[in-house]
Length: 143
Image (cartoon, rainbow, N blue to C red):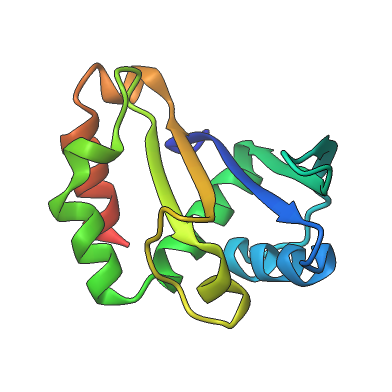
Protein backbone atom coordinates (compact mmCIF):
# COMPACT_ATOMS: atom_id res chain seq x y z
CA UNK A 1 0.00 0.00 0.00
CA UNK A 2 1.20 3.49 -0.80
CA UNK A 3 1.66 6.11 1.90
CA UNK A 4 -0.37 9.25 2.42
CA UNK A 5 2.35 11.58 1.07
CA UNK A 6 2.69 11.77 -2.72
CA UNK A 7 5.69 14.10 -2.87
CA UNK A 8 7.88 16.37 -0.80
CA UNK A 9 9.91 19.22 -2.24
CA UNK A 10 12.52 21.37 -0.51
CA UNK A 11 13.77 24.51 -2.27
CA UNK A 12 16.23 27.17 -1.19
CA UNK A 13 18.60 29.82 -2.52
CA UNK A 14 22.36 29.73 -2.01
CA UNK A 15 23.95 33.15 -2.15
CA UNK A 16 27.57 33.75 -3.23
CA UNK A 17 28.67 34.22 0.40
CA UNK A 18 27.17 30.90 1.54
CA UNK A 19 28.55 27.36 1.38
CA UNK A 20 26.27 25.14 -0.74
CA UNK A 21 27.53 21.93 0.90
CA UNK A 22 26.81 23.26 4.38
CA UNK A 23 23.22 24.09 3.47
CA UNK A 24 22.85 20.78 1.62
CA UNK A 25 23.97 18.88 4.73
CA UNK A 26 21.45 20.79 6.85
CA UNK A 27 18.67 19.87 4.41
CA UNK A 28 19.81 16.23 4.42
CA UNK A 29 19.63 16.23 8.25
CA UNK A 30 16.15 17.75 8.05
CA UNK A 31 14.95 15.04 5.67
CA UNK A 32 16.85 12.19 7.32
CA UNK A 33 18.39 11.13 4.01
CA UNK A 34 21.05 12.10 1.54
CA UNK A 35 19.78 13.74 -1.60
CA UNK A 36 21.48 15.62 -4.38
CA UNK A 37 19.63 18.84 -5.15
CA UNK A 38 18.97 20.02 -8.67
CA UNK A 39 20.62 23.42 -9.03
CA UNK A 40 20.14 26.33 -11.35
CA UNK A 41 22.60 29.23 -11.52
CA UNK A 42 21.11 32.70 -11.49
CA UNK A 43 22.47 36.21 -11.31
CA UNK A 44 21.49 38.63 -8.57
CA UNK A 45 20.61 42.29 -9.00
CA UNK A 46 24.22 43.37 -8.52
CA UNK A 47 25.74 40.60 -10.65
CA UNK A 48 26.36 38.23 -7.75
CA UNK A 49 25.88 34.50 -8.28
CA UNK A 50 22.85 32.81 -6.72
CA UNK A 51 22.07 29.12 -6.93
CA UNK A 52 18.50 27.89 -6.78
CA UNK A 53 18.50 24.41 -5.27
CA UNK A 54 15.62 21.94 -5.15
CA UNK A 55 15.21 18.45 -3.75
CA UNK A 56 12.15 16.56 -5.01
CA UNK A 57 11.17 13.26 -3.39
CA UNK A 58 8.28 10.94 -4.20
CA UNK A 59 6.82 7.74 -2.87
CA UNK A 60 8.51 6.01 0.04
CA UNK A 61 11.34 8.56 0.10
CA UNK A 62 8.82 11.42 0.47
CA UNK A 63 6.90 9.53 3.16
CA UNK A 64 10.10 8.82 5.11
CA UNK A 65 11.38 12.39 4.77
CA UNK A 66 8.04 13.81 5.94
CA UNK A 67 8.07 11.57 9.01
CA UNK A 68 11.63 12.60 9.83
CA UNK A 69 10.85 16.28 9.29
CA UNK A 70 7.80 16.23 11.57
CA UNK A 71 9.61 14.30 14.31
CA UNK A 72 12.48 16.83 14.12
CA UNK A 73 10.24 19.85 14.64
CA UNK A 74 10.39 21.36 18.12
CA UNK A 75 6.98 21.18 19.85
CA UNK A 76 6.48 24.96 19.70
CA UNK A 77 7.17 25.05 15.93
CA UNK A 78 4.84 22.11 15.30
CA UNK A 79 2.18 23.77 17.46
CA UNK A 80 2.52 27.02 15.54
CA UNK A 81 2.16 25.23 12.20
CA UNK A 82 -0.93 23.34 13.39
CA UNK A 83 -2.54 26.47 14.84
CA UNK A 84 -1.99 28.39 11.58
CA UNK A 85 -2.62 25.46 9.24
CA UNK A 86 -5.15 27.30 7.08
CA UNK A 87 -2.44 29.78 6.07
CA UNK A 88 -0.04 26.96 5.12
CA UNK A 89 -2.32 24.97 2.79
CA UNK A 90 -3.17 25.86 -0.80
CA UNK A 91 -6.28 25.13 -2.86
CA UNK A 92 -4.84 21.73 -3.89
CA UNK A 93 -4.35 20.69 -0.23
CA UNK A 94 -0.55 20.97 -0.41
CA UNK A 95 1.19 22.04 2.79
CA UNK A 96 3.77 24.84 2.54
CA UNK A 97 6.20 25.61 5.37
CA UNK A 98 9.06 28.11 5.38
CA UNK A 99 11.94 27.34 7.70
CA UNK A 100 14.69 29.77 8.62
CA UNK A 101 17.77 28.75 6.62
CA UNK A 102 20.36 30.20 9.01
CA UNK A 103 18.80 28.44 12.00
CA UNK A 104 18.66 25.19 10.07
CA UNK A 105 22.36 25.40 9.20
CA UNK A 106 23.18 26.01 12.86
CA UNK A 107 21.24 22.89 13.86
CA UNK A 108 17.94 24.43 14.99
CA UNK A 109 14.55 24.46 13.33
CA UNK A 110 12.40 27.57 13.35
CA UNK A 111 9.91 29.16 11.01
CA UNK A 112 11.18 32.04 8.89
CA UNK A 113 10.33 34.14 5.89
CA UNK A 114 13.43 36.26 5.17
CA UNK A 115 15.73 33.72 3.52
CA UNK A 116 13.78 30.48 3.91
CA UNK A 117 14.08 26.86 3.10
CA UNK A 118 10.70 26.19 1.50
CA UNK A 119 9.06 22.83 2.12
CA UNK A 120 6.08 21.68 0.05
CA UNK A 121 4.24 18.50 1.02
CA UNK A 122 1.72 17.12 -1.43
CA UNK A 123 -0.68 14.48 -0.07
CA UNK A 124 -2.36 11.79 -2.13
CA UNK A 125 -5.43 13.64 -3.43
CA UNK A 126 -7.95 10.85 -3.03
CA UNK A 127 -7.19 10.72 0.71
CA UNK A 128 -7.78 14.43 1.27
CA UNK A 129 -10.81 15.23 -0.90
CA UNK A 130 -10.58 18.98 -0.37
CA UNK A 131 -10.19 18.84 3.41
CA UNK A 132 -6.50 19.69 3.63
CA UNK A 133 -6.62 21.40 7.03
CA UNK A 134 -8.33 18.43 8.71
CA UNK A 135 -6.05 15.95 6.93
CA UNK A 136 -2.81 17.66 7.98
CA UNK A 137 -4.08 18.39 11.50
CA UNK A 138 -4.62 14.64 12.05
CA UNK A 139 -1.38 13.73 10.32
CA UNK A 140 0.83 16.22 12.20
CA UNK A 141 -0.67 15.43 15.59
CA UNK A 142 -0.27 11.68 15.09
CA UNK A 143 3.49 11.81 14.45
